[in-house]
Image 1 (cartoon, helix red, strand yellow):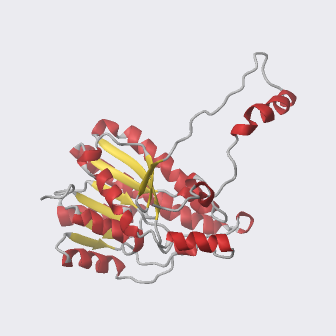
Image 2 (cartoon, rainbow, N blue to C red):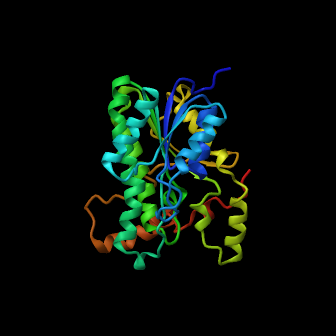
Length: 304
């Protein structure tokens, strides 16, 4: 029985290991030919394993799938063009782009330096734009295509010491929705997934308190392979009516996440003064203000 992605070609960035590799392997099992992109760096962006992409591609080929490797950086515009060209050279087309590549440079905000800010924004946000934009003319010409961007509940909800990562991941949500709206006329879709899975990126979570240790122990139970089926679905023709959405995948759970909409309102016929706002806003809107919660505070129950 042919897989849901038979005949399709996917690019997965940051696919040398962890969540990206599991996604690539899942797409290959569903029938897609896959370009494995990975520069082979550590969690913080230093050179580590230059052969990571080829090793992952070889694993897929060894299991009977089709895969090609690429080591270009998503953070560079010219390199992004070469990543897409790898798909065209190896398989003749591109149908799915999975923006998964990322690094971390965690620091509490008042100690975060500009280089830590730029490095994370370059890979996550600029990288997602670069690859998406490089694939866009091909999607437009063939009148089809699917983008799947990895966001994070750290960006959607919040976390300590990750201003750069949070800004990038929430920016990706805006980028995805813009792509969905601009390219709808070409039958191109764009969605986000916030994945819960034990990976290098999650392994950096501090475990100084007992609560953090319990949280990490639960995360270790959630393997990267659990993310792949949702990615495969969103890349398939079965998801043709799904675009501009944000999902979270946590073990065997799939969540549709909310997006900003008006919650409460105040109006005053004669207009506002600062004093009038101070008098009325706290009582009227105070109960609806969003608390400063972390992802773990919102997803406080055990994964299924």
